[in-house]
Amino acid sequence: MVTDADLKFLIEKLDEKIGQNKKWDNVIEKGNDLLYYSAKCCKPKVGPVKYLSVTIFEDCSPEMLRDFYMDNDYRKQWDKMLIEHEQLHVDKNNGVEVGRTIKKFPLLTPREYVLAWRLWEGKDKTFYCFVKECEHSLAPRQKKYVRVGTFRSGWRIRKVPGRNACEIKMYHQEDAGLNVEMAKLAFAKGIWSYVCKMDSALRKYSTISNDQSSSAATAVTLIKKVPPGLEATDNNGATSAEPIIHRPITGGERKLSRRPSKKLLANGLLLVGGLVCLSRGRSSLGAKVAMAYILTKLNKRGASSSQNGDIAGI
Image (tube, rainbow, N blue to C red; front, side, top):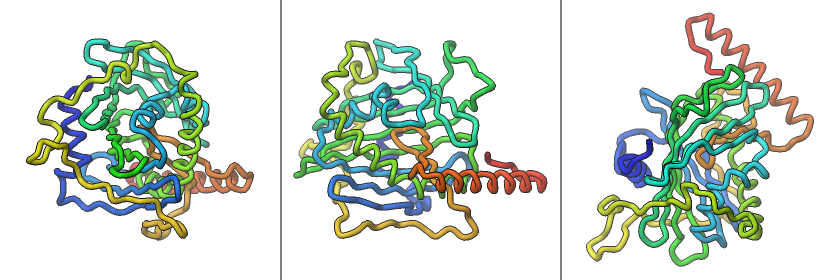
């Protein structure tokens, strides 16, 4: 279900060697002493919005960051939007793992993800993962969930040269049945608080990961080598990739995003770690009331659009 051809597709997307004529809009750029995050998006003529993001974690090794991203049991401890996750199948021959995940959304029907993923190890402790939707006999469709039908996501983890830091660059595209403009706006407004939450969980994970080690077969334990020729090399045979120049932003935070005109601010759909998440940010009563009001307005707007022949996205 996940092949070396998918890895080739991912590397081309991450290196931005294809589709260079497409317009990418900067969404956000923020950072502090321990963390840096930036993201941009592109709306293709056909299909869901595409996202490219870069996150840099200081004081972190590639292996630790890889294990943290792939530990769904630990994710359930810090990601409160994750209702359920279960492993459905592991192919010990090709290293493909299949799992089912349920995410809850305030005021919306929970989304169900049935996904297959595979990991590869490249040169100089570089790791790749590609994830896509699939079907499995142990996960029949249920009316109480909305099954996500289109999902293409992947990342590359590598060490930042000259620093005790790691970069994860991610490509993500999915259709979760949400209004496109709402999703883009909510992503921009909610992603930074979620990434900060992820960073805090990563710091704790580095101290407890040894206690949670398991002998069960997973895509991590069955990781494959990157096939020869897929990773670009320079004339000296060394791995070649675009230089990592991102550094934590100090002396205040900077954000790149267009101010939405006539858009209601949602607090926030997140496309992180290869899974869609909804972050409510602060859990104050006022924030929850605001979220309910915004989604009610969006639902009314979507209903009105449907009457005019448009398709409501929620």
